[in-house]
Amino acid sequence: MFDNLSDRLDKAFKLLKGQGHITEINVAETLKDVRKALLDADVSYKIAKTFTETVKEKALGQNVLTAVSPGQLMIKIVHEELTALMGHTNVEIDTKGSPAIILIAGLQGSGKTTFSAKLANYLKNKKSKKVLLVAGDVYRPAAIDQLKVLGEQINVEVFTEEGSKDPVGIAKKAVNHAKTMGHSVVVVDTAGRLAIDQQMMDEIASLKKNLNPQETLFVVDAMTGQDAVNTAKAFNDRLDFDGVVLTKLDGDTRGGAALTVRSVVEKPIKFVGIGEKIDALDVFYPKRMADRILGMGDIVSLVEKAQEQFDQEEARRLQKKIAKNQFNFDDFLKQLQQIKKMGNVKDLMGMIPGMGKAMKDVDLEDDAFAGIEAIIYSMTPEERANPAIINGSRRKRIAEGSGTSIQEVNRLIKQFGDTRKMMKMMSGGGSKLMNMMKGVPGMRK
Image 1 (tube, rainbow, N blue to C red):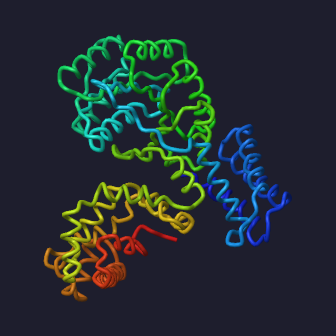
Image 2 (tube, rainbow, N blue to C red; image 1 turned 90 degrees about the vertical axis):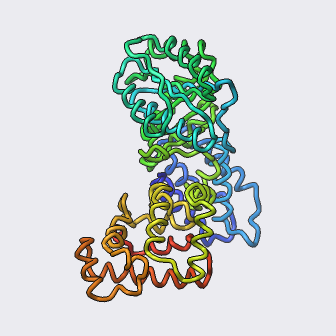
Image 3 (cartoon, one colour; image 1 turned 60 degrees about the vertical axis):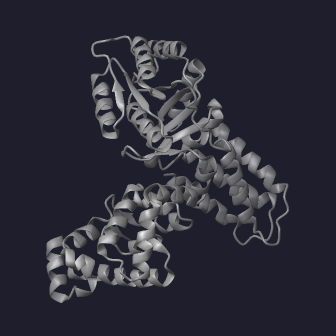
């Protein structure tokens, strides 16, 4: 995400590299490119102009410390302003209520139904809430079926009323059902249209009036850029919603919607969708997003994702095996499975400071570990438990069984051996496994 914007901003800051001090001339040249970068990212001209004028005013009003270069100072100021533009701090979703009601609104195709299920999964697993999903899209039968399938995947009840064309009536019955069954949160999926129309606005406004929800969230496709911002404004003028959800942010290399929707509607971005998987939903943190846009990584989010997957008991067990030099391919395979659950590998690498640029020209396939897994699965249980016995003939058999070459098998075994030695020396646990990603099948320069 934000690849184009990050590249353009990086080039703009290079104009100040090596400059001894900030002047009106070199700041103007840099900010001209910053403004172009924002416009290319589908940020409106008015916001881009205001943004660069604010940065210029702050940059010219500061003296450059001896320990800070003009380029570093400019990056700091731009980082602060990007964070402010996206809302300063994150705003938590309100789940207070008996039950709390969350109303989902947006255009057709924006990802409302999928987001509803993702939100239910998030509230269930991370907030320990008992959630009821409500199929309130009475015009699109596929939406009801989709919600049922997703609800079954995450083991969350879905309330439907087949044949009814009254979304308000369905939602009211769902709330009563939730009270009876002890659900703490009700998430109401609603109908969308291909464009904003009066009937849709009247219907969603009626739902909000009758349900009096704790949260009304507007879901919008981030890839529609400035159109997303305009649609958000039209909905907010009528609904006065509480927050924005940007879906498909992982596919948006420009990022204009994320940068400007907050300042236009004056409502916080609360969540971002970053993939198709049911757990591919992130709480939106303006500062962390600014870090990623400027190539500073996002270590906090990376650590949080890791903590969700790696439990303490497994970590202690692994550490004992490492200390005794007993870490084997079965252990390594478990670690790979946990890393894969954290999300898209290239996105994860981009969260490490400095890695975003390094990964720019690396073609990392969605299933980057497929080659490694194939090699390991082609080993016998004895070989996985005791890699030292894998001789030449065994390597040839493993290569043929995994559809890879002997060279790839040799490289994996060598890297595994080197990593195991390093891990034993440092006794640092599974975090060092990321070093194994260098040269894996599926990653190409």
